Amino acid sequence: MKWTEKAWDRIVPIYEQIITMPFNQELLQGSLSKERFKFYMAQDAYYLGEFGKALSTISGRLRDLDQVLAFSQFASGAIVVERALHEGYFKTLGIPDQINPSPTCLLYTNYLLSKSAYSNVEVAVAAVLPCFWIYKKVGDHIYSQQETVKDNPYKNWIDTYAGEDFAKSVQHALEIADQLASQSSEKLQEEMLEAFEMATRLEWMFWDSAYKMEKWSI
Ligand SMILES: Cc1ncc(C[n+]2csc(CCO)c2C)c(N)n1
Image: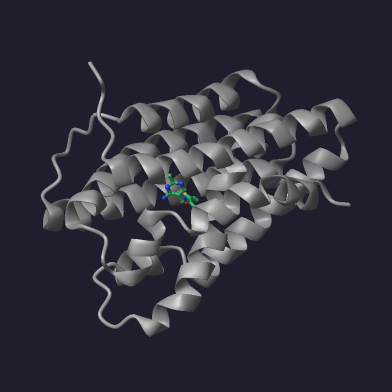
């Protein structure tokens, strides 16, 4: 069994809950409040910048040059989306340039930055994988259902991760994770699974915190 198959099996219960979260249901229906979407967008822009840095760090730590190149392309992909948000949604929604991360956003980004710098690079790759894979799965799910909803105001955002190029990146990231896992000990593979599960949980929390428009309690 491939490592990625084991990884998916492990997070199926979380994935099933992600699909039915109010944030994603309302995004799909087009009924999500503008306030919540705006909160999400601002936090996501912060997330994307930090995620891009984590991917760059991983890129520099990989040994195989094809993998180095792939991760540096993923990093620029994340920053390009961040820039596009700034040019587009930030202006139309009136989001300020300076974003203070919410507790969950800071938790998730710092988790990824810390894994990318201080864990084995195999574990770091496993930690960033849910970002790709969960968005692909959730995106496909939403995309397949949204035909029923006319004039969804969030259509542009839903389309962001629906293209062929994104599908190829996800496939490539999965292949790299499997290549690395196949050269790793059982113990390291288990550590990779744990990081993958933790980051999946943090994806759930990121949507949940956007729906709640989470604030710092002090
Ligand atoms: C919280 C959060 N998690 C994942 C993504 C999706 N995403 C961000 S960068 C990237 C791949 C490289 O461009 C993908 C798939 C997001 N937008 N926000």
